[in-house]
Image (cartoon, rainbow over all chains, first blue to last red; front, side, top):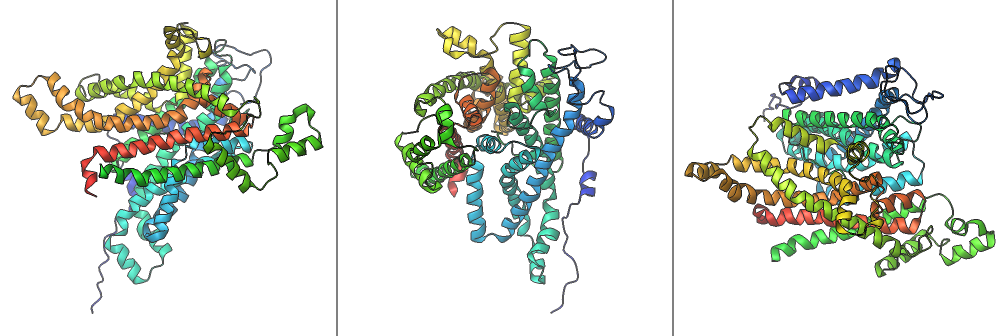
Length: 295
Length: 317
C-alpha cells in the first residue's frame, strides 16, 4: 500500500499568529488594552519612581489631604497613599498572575489529558471536579487561610487550587473538539506517545482557549484576592495590597476618605480593564466567554 | 413529570454527595486550626487535669474519623454543638443571623427583579441609541467592581459626604418597617447593583437576538406598536434566561453577602462565618459553612433544573 506523504493540515495557533489576529479595531478593546498596559508598566517600573516607600511612616504627617507632595494624601500611619497604590500594583498583579498561571498550567494539562484518555478515568475525574467546583470557594479559602497564617505563597496556592478544576473543565471541552480530528488519529497510529500527542497535536490547537482562560482567571483572581485581603485573610499587613488598604482605611473613612478612594479606583480600573480585555480577546479569537458567577 | 424526575434525581444525589464532601473538607480544615480547644474554652481556669477531663468529654482525643461521624450524626439530628466563644448552643447563634441575612437578601431580590428585567429590556430595545454605549459602560462597571468597593464608595457618597443613610447597618435597633428600609438601604443597593449588572449582561444576548428575529420584524411590519412588541415578544423571552440568572445570583449572594455584611457591619450569617473563623470557634464555623454551602449547592442545582426544564431541546436526550 502506498504511503501518503501529504501532511494533514494542522490548525496550530502559536503566540505569534495569535498576536497577528488581534485586530485592535474596537475602541473599547483599544482603551482596555491601553489601560492594561498602563497597569503593567506601573507594576514593572513603580519602585523606581514612587516618591516614598510603601512602609515609610512620616512622623507628624498623618491624615494629610492630597497635596502636591502627597498626590493621594497620607494615611493614619503617615504613609504616602499614592506610593502605596503604585507599589501595591506590583503585589496585586503578581499575586493574580501567579495564581492564574499555575491554575492554567495544571488545569490545561489535566483537561487535555482527560479529553485524550476518556473512558472511566475521565468519568471519575469529571465527577470529582464537579464536586470540587460546587464547593463555595470563599468559605474554604477563608478556612485554609485562617488556619494557616496567610502568606503570599499560600494565597497563590489556595487561589490556584480553586481555579484548576474550572480551567480543566474548559480546556477539556476545547480539547474534545480536537481529539476527534484525523491528524490526532494518524499521530496515534504512527506510534506517537500520549505525551507527544498532547504537546504537539492537542495543545497548539487549544492555545486560544488557554490564553483566554488565563486572562479570565487573572481578572477573577484580582477580585478574589482583593476580597480575601479586605476581610483580613489575604495579604498580610503592611503589604500595600489594595484590598487590604481599603480595609485599613475604612476605620477612619470620614477623617481621610482618600485613603480608601485611591486603592478603590485603582482596583476598579484594573478589574474593568482585564474584563474588557478578556471579552475583546475572546470575541476576536472566536470564543464566547462563559461568564462565571464569582462567589 | 417523569422527565422532571429524571432530571432531578441524579442531580439531587450529586448535590448531597457534594454537601458531604463539603462537610469533610470543612471538618478537615478545622482540624488544622492551631491550638487546643479544651484549654481555649477553660481559659484562665485551665489546668492540665481539667483540660484532660474536658477533652475526654468533648471527645477531642478520639481519632478524627470518630469525631467526624459524631459531629455529622449530631448535625443531621439538629444538634449543632456549642459555640466555644459565646458558650451558647450554635443554633441560638445562627438562627437570628440567618434571619437577618434573609431579610437583607429578600430586600435586595425585591429590588433586583423588576430592575433587572426593566433594564434588560430597555438596553436591548434602545441598543442603537446614542446613550447605549454609555449605558453599557455603566453596567460593565457594575459587574467589574468588587462588591466591597461598591459598598465603600456608596458609604463615601451617601453616608459620609451626604449624610442620607447610616454607614453601619445596625438592624437590631430598628423598630419599624420604614426604619428597616432606611437602615438597610445601602447594603441592599450594593447587592442589587452587583446582581442587576450581571443579570442584564447575561440577558442581553438572548434579548437582542429575539428583537432581531424575523417574527418580531413581522410583528412590527404588521403594525404592532413597539410597546406591544416588547410586551408579547421581548418580555416572555426574557423570562427564561432571567430565571436562570436569578438563581445563579442567589448562589452568588452566599459569597457576596459575606463581603457586603463586612463592609456595613451587618450582623448576618456572612459576618458570623468570618468572625468565627477569625476566633477559631470550630462548632460555629462548621455549622455556618454547612448552611452556606447548602444554599450555594441548592441554588446551583436549581439553576441546572431550571435550564433543563425550560429548554425543550434538552429533553431530546
